[in-house]
Image (cartoon, rainbow, N blue to C red; front, side):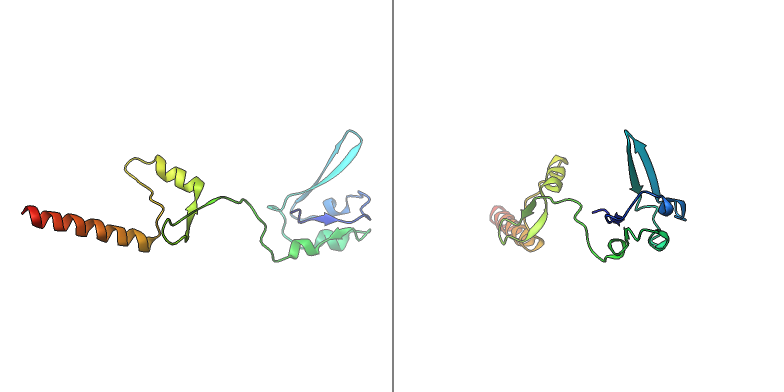
Length: 130
């Protein structure tokens, strides 16, 4: 999503660039085209560009929108027993690469139940041998 958006009234006068206190607006002239650039990391969201624009071309409301933008979507690994989402498949691959780590896709509840079963099995075997 581009936060600084302009409407059809933008004529490239650069009043926004010249009056931006954060230097968040720049311009690139290339091959007969002027491109106005905006850097959200520098932007102070002060609204000066919106106030100063003689054409009323800047759509400042997009910069004030309280929304979440999607960054990345990753496939999930679920608990083999109950289906609860655990972690992403990329994270699972990272775990699988570590020596001595067996990333069984189980939620904490089912990992604990499995550990109790294993302990009970070996405890019973040790009593029979001892």
